[in-house]
Length: 149
Length: 277
Image (tube, rainbow over all chains, first blue to last red):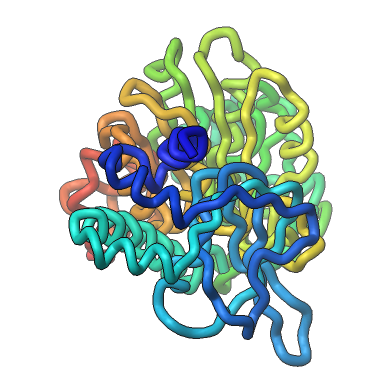
């Protein structure tokens, strides 16, 4: 548990989080490993995990009806995958490991419970996830503008 | 007087025959001219290219400054003049006058880490500066090139990219906005590459690409502690005369053709949201 706590707080999302908060989160987290080609998330499936990527590259893919699948973004070490998973619903994209991917998997139900139990933790995590969400929105806008056309 | 001297000393285009015309991806093409007397320029400068009987257009020089006998322009066909230039083949004659405008501050960057950030066809105006720095590698600190393109098919200068990637003294990172599943590289916007790039407020950062992209890049650089004084951008506005007389490219109190196209970012930041006057 102590080791997991140590490595967990090394992830950029949790960096500088109060030690008590990291300790509190340990119970929701586990280390996971995916081989190249494995799916972390499949479109349409229930989303119940927030992934904090530690190593490797994940391809975020969208299957188009009648067309080839496209990769809309690659994410890697330090990134967070599945911010949207904290709200109820099914996955709308595939997330596939391109190579060996190491990540922390945080159980959403457990995470939300703890965020409600400790509102200080809830606020700190919400702000960090909001920042990540805004960054991703900002990148998506730039991609949508198709500025190189 | 050599042809290049004649070109530089007057506003009259000098006729030059296309020695090589190469189709690049998606309406982009590269024209090479042999100039026996040499065509000297500073990286970042541009020429006015005249498609005879059609019109003139300002195009950055994208060749190697150490090889002045070969003048190179990489152009995207987006309008009447560039469309006319695209239709020309080897042996066709166009008018060339220049070089005009400001240059990347390569002397000022000496001794510092240098970061090049290019988007799309914006790699063309940066290419002479990259070639210059790599040729005089010992005079500069760490060198990184970040290049974003629309898709893998849109990547320019593939031979250069492969050569730069093969060097141990240069960090090249490439990213595309979208890709099929067969693309093994990174996908996303060019600012994502900053996540993996060591940055320092003393770096010299040269940025060229669509203006919207440059605004995102500069904002992300600032968030990472790189101030506007350390960033130079190459601006593009409708240039007609090339010498600051007609006013078409006026940007506040500056003329892009005469005072630019390369500007230190903090000096033009408020003007980036201004359209043409």
